[in-house]
Amino acid sequence: MSASGFSDLREKLKSMTPRDNYKNRVADKDESYKNRKVKVTDGGSRNGNGRKRKHRDSSEDEVEHSDPVESREQEARRVQSGIVQVEVFSKEDCDVIEGKINEVVANGEAGLYREHTVDRAPLRNKYFFGEGYTYGAQLEKRGPGQERLYPKGEVDDIPSWVHDLVITKLVASGVVPEGFVNSAVINDYQPGGCIVSHVDPLHIFARPIVSVSFFSDSALCFGCRFQFKPIRVSEPVLELPVRRGSVTVLSGYAADDITHCIRPQDIKERRAVIILRKTRPDAPRVDQSPSPNPSPPERHAPLKAKRSHRRADPDAAHRPRVLEMDKEENRHSSSSSRLHRRSSSSENYWRRSQDGDGSRKVKMRRH
Image (tube, rainbow, N blue to C red; front, top):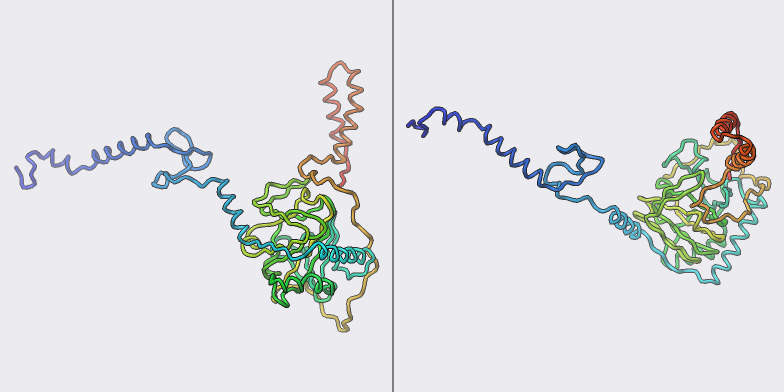
């Protein structure tokens, strides 16, 4: 026997070749792999049966993905952590403030405000005081971060009644510190009005964002997605009731990391909200060429009222909208159906109606 302990050279060579041990390890691994329960999904790598696996082949396979419902609930809790609601205004306070809001609307219809103070939209009017800013279709370049404050003096000052009746009470209640508010916006909604999902521009406004509701109860929704033609809104991550006279304060996750909106179905009666904010000192402004002879902003001619007085159906957001094109097609189908009775072949009629519609142009209207 040699010093290595082997009497046969073949035994020594066999012991020096790890192939057999490797095969045994692979076989053991394959056996354990077959016995393992694997989650299958359309994404991820494939297993030996050609099916896709959800997890990688590692110790992480034993870790389940979090439940989407649970994740949604966790996000809702994060949103809730950034919301404070307080009751500051009594019914009598609301009555007085709502009368003042009606005066603002009347002044806007009479053209008593500067050009950029009033911003009209279907079923919703905005009134900027103190500071106004460009947004949405007004932007030269679309997208978050492109919003700009108007030059100083382009919108009217905050009315004295907003200071006396609203801001003073919020300061006394500890909601905002003295001197915090320099921008007040009044949103006046008609039934069925809405505002799409958005985040108040971080580069324009400091936090918190304070809003006070008037005229009726409604809801503020977080994390919705809007689709249009017809308008549809996805389920919110959080639906927050807002009562008449209630104060809602947004900060943290609720103000910065998730969108909020007003859905059409949540405005069943007229509703107004006063939004009180502070602009950042470094917020960008719309470029304005200096004039050699500066003069105070002029009052513009009375603005033509653009508000729609029709009462929209709040539940219309969840029903298909009938467009003029659809009505035209329905009328065409009705007249063609009479001709169809005289035809012996419905298939030939279908071809004729399709050929006729293919070259026809129908004008669509926005509702």
